[in-house]
Amino acid sequence: FRILLILHSELLTFSCQQVLRRLLEQRSFRCRVWFHIEDPTGIQPAIQSRCVIKRISTYIHTIKHKTL
Image 1 (spheres, rainbow, N blue to C red):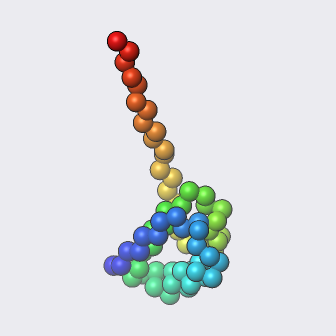
Image 2 (cartoon, rainbow, N blue to C red; image 1 turned 90 degrees about the horizontal axis):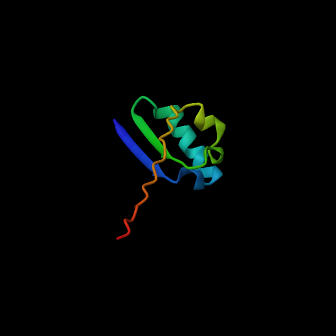
Image 3 (cartoon, rainbow, N blue to C red; image 1 turned 135 degrees about the vertical axis):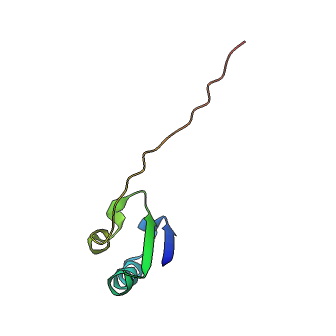
């Protein structure tokens, strides 16, 4: 298998997404693509329909200072 990791995928242009869509159509049995996105509305519905969508919850660590 080949794995392609694309960070900030919502910033991809329309034409680049079209190329990736064709790649997924032709080689989905040999190639896996991981899209890291913050806003899923930036990805074409044709690509989203071929994906398993997993939302990872956000954890924000805050430091608590002790006063003496």
